[in-house]
Amino acid sequence: MGVDLRELVLPYKKEIALEELRGIAAVDAFNALFQFITIIRQPDGTPLMDKTGRVTSHLSGILFRTANLMEKGIKPLFIFDGTPPPFKEETVQMRRDGRALAETLHKEALARGDIEEAYKQARAASRIDSTIIASAKRLITLLGLPVVDAPSEGEAQAAYMTISGDVGYAVSQDYDTLLFGSPALVRNLTVSGKRKMHGRSITVNPEKIFLDDLLFGQKISREELIQIGILVGTDFNRGCYGIGVKTGIKIVKEGGYEKTLKEKMPDFDPVPVEQFFLHPPVTKDYSLEWKTPDFEGIRAMLCEEYDFGEERVNRALSGLGLKIGQKTLDSWF
DNA sequence: ACTGACAC
DNA sequence: GTGTCAGTG
Image 1 (spheres, rainbow, N blue to C red):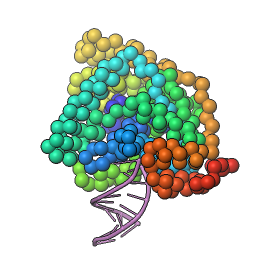
Image 2: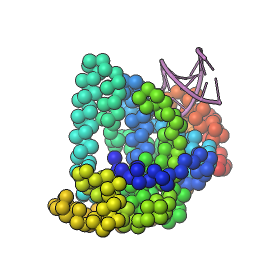
Image 3: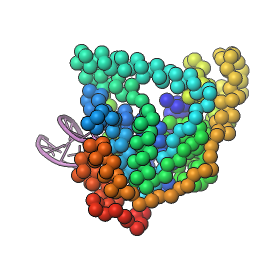
Image 4: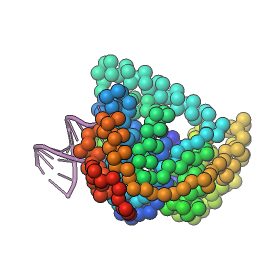
């Protein structure tokens, strides 16, 4: 998913405590929902569900994680994707095919009792459908947080809002916001501190990346960063076979970008993708207003409709000074 | 994602 | 305090 700039960014990422991330965080909603849906699962891969079989993992993630962030003085807003550009179609189709295959493999693994494989395939089959988006937006709104509908890519909108200064930083696991020009990106904000990897548990801390650190450090322009991304491959174009960031930056610095593309991918016109990263569709039509959470609304939605335990919901919100029977709070920041 | 219980 | 496990919906 997204452009793999990990190695290029490695020397410039800074581990940072939640407490130091005070301010407005523009969260790529699709990315966050995808994380919740893939992580919050039972050992055999079954996501959390209500009595009628509707997936609730994302609601659990939004509730507990954002409550946590808000207590630390972080004001999140969620940006949802709009219409993808036509040249993303290949990526969209590949993901569809990947999920379909994983679904088959998940059923087969379950049938022969291979729990570990079932878990892996269930995760790979995760899908963010319209019911998940709708229920997520509803809960976010009840929590009093802004929902922003991007005209196209959410990551582009997050970058735009960070550039404009309306938000402090973009939040995503992917590096695409950097290609879209976001001055600051925070990763690992919507995952917990601890993660199980191959049986071992590792600590995952939030990390902040400043675009200028990367550009000055690697002595490249943003245009060149985009060129590296295009050589390596993005959601909007297949990369050149055998080229990763190390080779990519070498080619770009030596001025071999266009020549390499002509040689390796003669049928690909990079200009629309370059222009998309430089001038993506974004909107100024958003209002950033944090309201008092509607506790009764949250309780009614989660406990009555989605079978959440009242105590858990209450506990998650108690840090925000909200309790059952207490409907309003004058100011909570 | 989080929680509670228990081990060390 | 930190680690692990089972459970949540």
